[in-house]
Amino acid sequence: MPLLRSAFIALSRNRSLRRFAERSRMGVKMSSRFIAGMEIEDALRVAKAVNEQGMAVTLDSLGESVTSEAEAQRAAAIYHRLLDAIAERKLDANISVKLTQMGLGLSAELAEGIAESLARHAAATGNFVRIDMEDSSLTQVTLDLVRRIHAQPALQGAIGIVIQAYLYRSQEDIAQLLAEGIRVRLCKGAYKEPAEVAFPRKADVDRNYIRLSCALLESGIFHGLATHDEAMIAEAKSYALQQGIDRSRFEFQMLFGVRRDLQRKLVADGYKVRVYVPFGGEWYPYFMRRLAERPANVLFIAKNLLRK
Image (cartoon, rainbow, N blue to C red; front, side, top):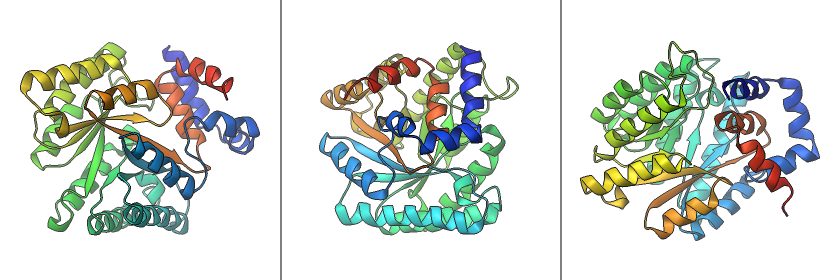
């Protein structure tokens, strides 16, 4: 399994395969189960449909490292359009942003300026922007940026972050974020990391995920637990019940097109669910990391390709 995971991570970085996949008919067909579409209107249409099923949405315009400030500003403009459209259409949706897509690889100041402008726009429209976490080389700069923006009185509550349970440092990071009142999306992590910084064994990642989710649940701050793992969900539900934590004080987050049955069941049981809805032509790295995260998804995708 570790070898298969490593293979998918390597494939996610293969530029030739990426170009072929993103332009091929089969690639588009494969991605359609998990990607809302190529355009903003596709994402908004899916967001409305998900809302009608009783679930909230996070919209993600796919794309990662940009090579110019102009590219970063174009990527940011898509998110500004999303924030306006969400407000105009009264959707239950927020946005999720990668700093490398906002120019972090070019200039930390550029990325922070764009992220702050999005947080200001979100605050002005009563919305929220989540800053995604990327590989461990960017963990500290991402944390520092989010903390600086959140520290501005007008932006408190308008920006949050993602923490990955497979990193050793995450327990300490969460303690600091909770002390500052910053909202967290907790996930297991989907990048290939060395054993020096991340738990190599799934069992250890799972234990840490449970430990961190309990800390988030008891914090009194509204957080998101991102997982499709029914064991992790059961642990969170059990802990919330034991501690008298109301179901309205947290949400489960899942990916568009994955475990729709579980999403519906959670809603039927009275839990809040938010669906992560990605869109855009640059879907290939995202798609391959989902396979790396859980290689059993390969069989799942193969089965779904035979449907409809």
